[in-house]
View 1 (cartoon, rainbow, N blue to C red):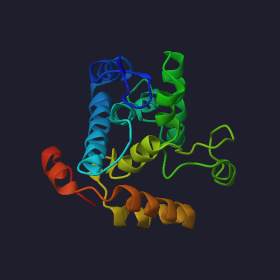
View 2: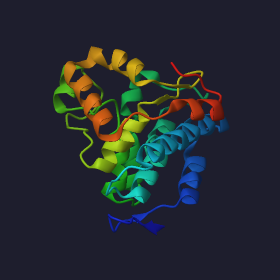
View 3: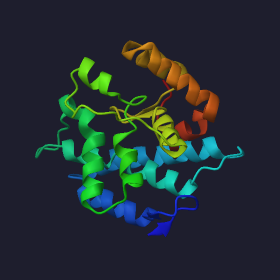
Length: 206
């Protein structure tokens, strides 16, 4: 464990986080898909913070990026298939997993508060989502950055990097408020340069 520079919270190291992914991934393929995505999100967040003045807890952001999708493993069935119908639950499942392992709430929340541009009680009710009625919204700047960086890469088959324009076109169906929230993130953090990462990982930009 390490202590976050701003939070004072004991934060798992990269090695400990990788060990958690290896422990809970049901297959090597699932590990490669989820852990690689988490690493990419981490690199995106680091790029967005580079050369910008900020007071974010960088160690906490890094842990949040590397852990945010760990709940996805809970949705794989015994044959290695992903339960797409309940995918929206992966954040809550990750939060519960980390909480049960004794992680502090400030770390667990990166799992439950990164889906889309955040899910409100109204979203849960209106969209009839398979979640307890509650707010699942990023609150701290660290949570907001992890949620935002996550939008620029998709684990779909095959994985792709997602441009800001493409993301906006897709999220518009969920309400103008989601588009406005994304625009606020662009204003706060800027847009990442996807080309170098796309080249490194061999994933196209859509």
